[in-house]
Image 1 (cartoon, rainbow, N blue to C red):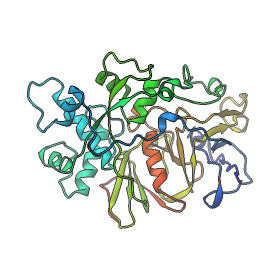
Image 2: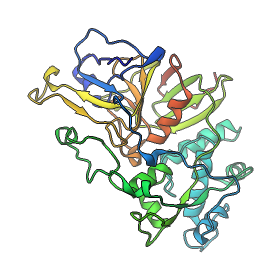
Image 3: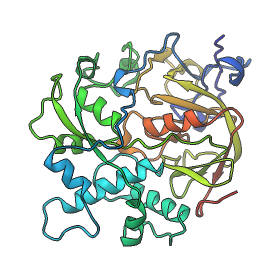
Image 4: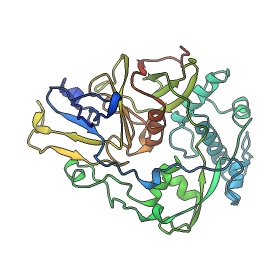
Length: 374
């Protein structure tokens, strides 16, 4: 049975977490409704309808792109070949995919250096007994490619890939957003980019002249999926690194994810909390009439589920009221723009983490420092 779990109005700043409410509940991992003012709720729809483009794609170990560009990425070596066109981009693509396959997520795979990749490399170095400086260098490269499989694949677009339904445009105004019956992808290329953890610009650049709206088109994509993530026994949110670290029962670091963390004005919590519940395909609801500040004249709004929902594709509710770890409608901004206090991941990283945790898993917020083991 599904129960709505309410979000308390603790203060104006807490409500300004915007996407941070409480998920509805099902079964033993769910909580009954609380007798408190309903300010914001996050709940799964009565009949979840996952987007077809979110389904994972399994690539056989022997698979790899047959295109010249795909082979160039597969064969990229460190250091990049001097003078070779796109050599550095191909190296970075291969390194990012290998990090993702090892569960050290660089966030959006874009073939570009940046803080998210640096933090992923730093965590990977620490987990493999290497000096932690976050730099891609020969020692790190050799470890990454030691047992590397394919990092690219040829993928043929199917009718469901291009059929939608797609939202012609995702509005930024919540009143307009609430008019949509689903916060779907806006185009096939957006859906495909998220499905393969890629930046839309990179997907387009790797496939010049391809019509992403036509079933039967064959495209070059990366293959970021690795072995399933083990069950997670502890989550650590490192505020200064803007990174979520997940540990197995043995105390070893099992996965890391770039994250958007709260700002000084709207901070993420501190201390130790725990996973309370998980909501797949959450809707988001808030009632402005309950506010004690600002414009209270607006009507209650229910934002439908979908990957472009303000909390993305999945919500991991925390025992700290109104806070959660959740997905994002714009993966490019994860780790690069502060949240309103919650912990924001890419949709694919949030889903991977959600599938590996259960009620009661500790979630510890730390200010700084390297990953810890126990």
